[in-house]
Length: 166
Image (cartoon, rainbow, N blue to C red):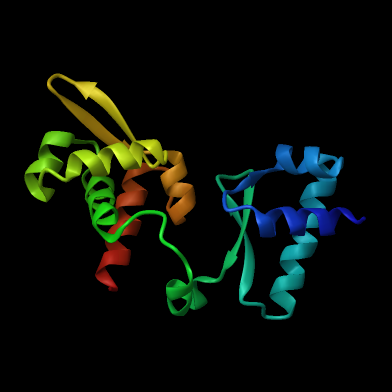
């Protein structure tokens, strides 16, 4: 088996970004061989104008996904990770972070408590005790999963841009 085939299969099957270290373990290849194989795969998808791409996430992890231009028509085929209501709560947290749970409850209602619990369990937000409430912030997993920058100000700007075009 070729290293490229193993990496392609791993990226195809994974719903989470895979680090270079994990790809090394899966394939038995070196970091350099993995990087070269990923470049070959990326070039192959690009050269045939595929609807699929391999995207670098966080500098050292990779994910195979549908290109953004094809994502919207495919939404009906994908089961959402969270409901529309939970996604609205997550969006509010991402835009206002750091934000207290009390502020989010005031804006979104008492269902926010269940939403926060679900989002913490899925690893999209952190909820740190802050007096009688909790301080809510998004995680690196949130940024990686939704394709946003990790730096909070850049993330807020990117989310605001996304909202503006909808």
